[in-house]
Image (cartoon, rainbow, N blue to C red; front, side):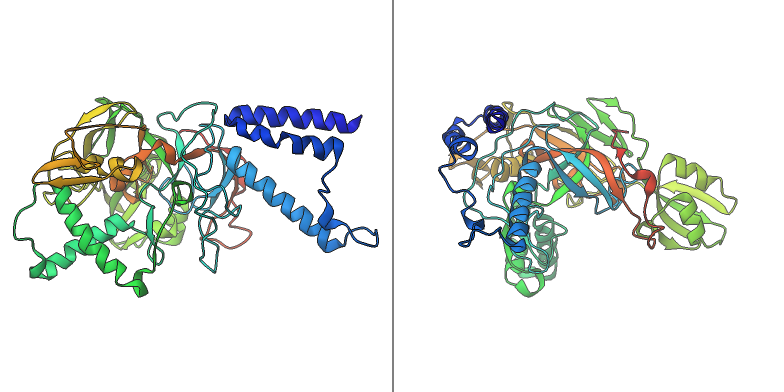
Length: 470
């Protein structure tokens, strides 16, 4: 009787899972489930049996337990939740470096993997060997299962790095698109023979030219940059940022303040800006930095001038110190080069702290294309939605046909770090496609301070801390 009860429970779970996934071909394996519990015609444990009839060895038992654990972890990571460690200070003080998070996949709906054959607990490469941890075949198209909701404005979100598709394995930061442009610009400045004989019709053509030069230099210098590998969407590095603009939103930053659809928005409590702090000659010591709560990695400058990221509360603390003469916020102004920030065009005179207005693309929405705004949408058209793009004599061609407009297939988001001037985010690489969304951090289950030794480095007050928007 017990085996029928177990079979009934397993059948219910399996059928509900098939309905959730929406692929009823999986029902073809249902007879195997029936056999495993009821008929037992297939010798599922054949590899553990010994000829003498004795119990399997301890080694076999350990292998059996390990295989079961890996399969369970693999399925949990795909459909339920995943562990993620905060590697940088881009979200300080909302989330801290070396916070370990449980990331919920069901909050926004788990994605079916693009690369279903992969080793659990490893994102894209094995440690030490630096070899691939997944198989490129088979490759499944993007599909997201039903979840508990959608991404909301100001949610903290884990996502795959959008420009992490082509990666020089020895230099992954900045991404190859920013890196190749920087190299190309510098090479053209150094070598007059590379200066084009005629002007470009658009910033897009100019950027393609610079990136082409830089890409060839990277490809021909494998000793410094390593092999360039392609990574599918689900195997790109995981990033965590705050979603500040949803599909259809008009995003803008004015002197570090965000405006959505023309309205000023509330700032998260952990928001930090960079400040120039001038003292009366007093040297700021470790005791001061520890009291204020500034990590070693963020302690820049020397007496009497320091450059520090501060929250509003920290700012008031610093201003209250008798030896501090002045505190001024750092603000980057736009320049005319068009090489400072996405979309890397002099037609968009933006900076890190004064950005936009920029509208977020919406699935099904059609936008008019021209030589000016093509730099905004080129990666959407090509890398994210799988088309070819070219420009000939000032005319735009998509998939070989002349085009004056484009209809988006997916929704797109804008992600920022709370440590605003120390965050590589959408201001550097643009929109985040919906198929790159991984999940939502739910709680911190472990946290430690890399600037301290054990056991003082354990942040006990952060254990099982719920991750809130603010």
